[in-house]
Length: 348
Length: 129
Image 1 (cartoon, each protein chain N blue to C red):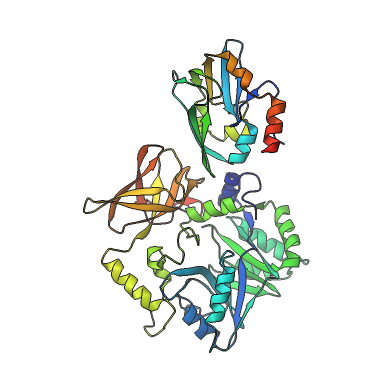
Image 2 (cartoon, each protein chain N blue to C red):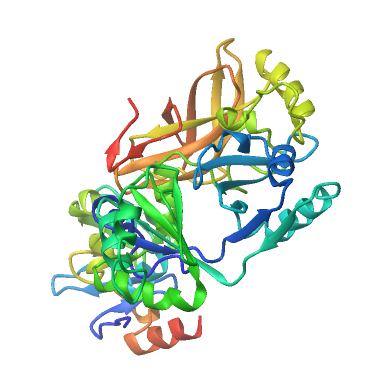
């Protein structure tokens, strides 16, 4: 996947206003099947796969180590034979090792699916275009379009050896299509014939940042508590007796959080000229009046909003903050992470 | 296809300068530079009247990828800036040698121009780097 196919900003805008396709085949698809698949993933993941009541349902989860550090973030889909996980690319080897290490005692099969490709098609026109293509006889034909059109958010469907999900990483409507790699080029071409534009990694990053979504390795990693990465809602504490890996450590993180000692991941907005960038130091004034430091985990110019936005990890009791850019201290606004959804500004 | 107009002189840090008939010159950044930077989202320009010396930092370009300083390829006094860039910085990407100019400068030492590269030398320089 290139950084861009021409202009990152044009690709970004295309997803916000029409439709773009991302070749995210570098991501890792892992199928977990077998009679203990549920029990295994309930141990492995901080979110609870038992929440997935219907076939095709999806959820987002962290995979933690014993210290409560984030090993990876992923999507799990409920399939007829078990579960399908889509994990990051850079974490692939680590994840597979970790999953194998914790598989003993469970009657499961963990199978990577390297022969599948993933094309994510997002934007206000994405779903209707994908459905129109799927209905063609050279693809899935018949009523496949209607089945996909009626998918709800965070639902997926298996159609022959294709897998289509209403999930994504942009804050727009869209689909992630997991398909046999040999069919990916013709599907890609069909999308381009319908005026869907190829979108690179650069726009993928600005789109997900506008949507307020974390990027593994930037916004959290093994040294980060999910509670310090705006992932609280993805931790399934109930039932009390589900002993997922990292649970005990997270209890301590919770105590620290209550004491105000755990840094938080916030959204930052800078309407002045200039660009917030990863790693920039944030100068925070705490409620006590003390000065402390935070840092930007993901920062960029927002093509939709036409000013800078960022995710930053700052002390929990920060009252106000500023960034130093070329000798100027510029005040920043602290907002909930999440800046743009369905093409519109969502923070106040 | 990267373009290198013949009527300009170029500096190693990818600024171009075009000498006008009245002893002034126009300065911008090259097609090669704008392509390397990617989509430009902000341009910071000097104030009119600023005295600038050869190779001083005189402007800043921020693209989606990176912030980059612009160095003056000549010494002199800034006589005009391209205020359109403040609102439409993407002009630098689209027309780097035309509407994407940065500033006009009254040259204080025309011999400095002799040390700049012509189009062919600059094109070779870009190919090598």
